[in-house]
Image (cartoon, rainbow, N blue to C red; front, side, top):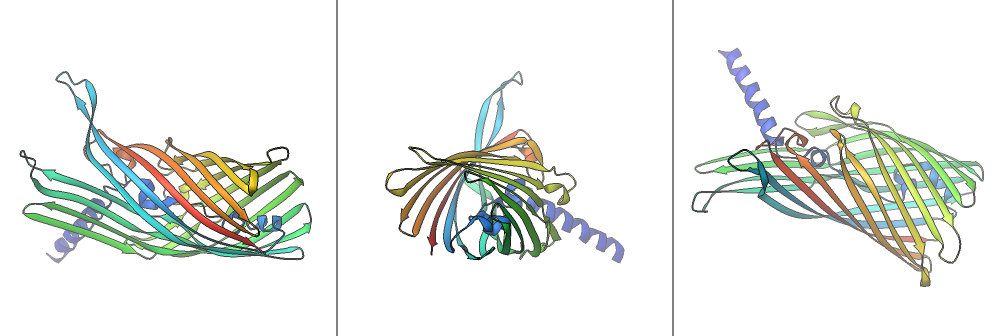
Length: 367
């Protein structure tokens, strides 16, 4: 009897855990990735060697996320005639805490900072109605928290055109997930929380092949995150990064930037794929030291690389003596199906459309 009761408890725990994560998309469950600036502090310490003056950076950001869930509508001959919306949700969250500093001393560069790198915030609500459109229940999923990166690095210039860098990073944060099912007269509430944390390292090399062209290559180690949730340890993927910057002089001075990142998601889960994300951008220097920035990127879904999330970036920068203010907007759009969730959702013919608007405000001060 004792053995039977233990097996029953195990099955209940497994079913509860599966039920809890069933309605969260894979990308949101792991956290939407954030790319804080300056990249020299949080991604490739070799780029610290490209700075000539000490600098301080402070910033904040926010994300508006809209998710629309639909299901296919069929005629009596089983032909698809359209889609019907059964849930439409919009959420807003703010992120604070980006702070970084860079200091130069002879051939050495030093950088340190703290910034959010993953956003776990996600909300879903579906109301249950009877035949008279009276609310008789609801299905609610709420996930909150963020993962932060505290980094410190050092670079060395053996000569002016070459930079070498290495550093350490500590990931920490919090994550809470709650699922509530109200189906009168019953109510089911499941919750999970954690405080993920772990340490890793990163290194890189940078080269100024000519005054107008800079190249850099970096590597971030995988990090074991303890206390992710009740399941215990999760692994933050390793990354290989390559970047390029080209300065074009002329009537409209411009910078062309490109960054490619290979994310090693296969170490996190054997069912996931290593994916290559790309960001391209242009920055123009206009009159009165105003800077205009725009670009685009592609972020594949690591559980299904055939799903590509396009991203469009826009930004303005204002220079006032040694102070620079930056305003940025990023717009994204992604189309998902039932299998792109941690566990497939019902109904199986669901179509999910996620649209995101990310806003960033930062301040840079050069000494």
